[in-house]
Image (cartoon, rainbow, N blue to C red):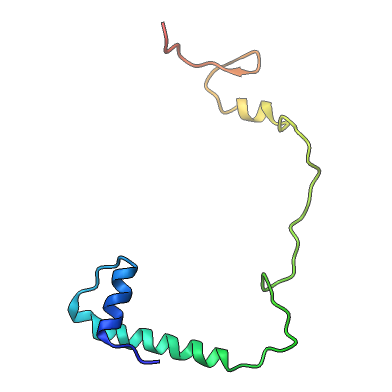
Length: 95
């Protein structure tokens, strides 16, 4: 399918893309090649081929859904400059 400059300008306007007049011919050629490739894909016989949602049939690993505190409080607090009773000590900001 060959596109002309007017069609490419209309597509650019619909997509709200500003395309300079000098680039319309080159863009028309590129879009025409893409549409030709899509037309070639439509010619392929895909009867009996099931649609896929992903290339690999993999399921994400599942874990138990439980609420925890992380169990690493001491490791986290080791990075703090000052702690008290298991909490960060920060300067007072409101008087």
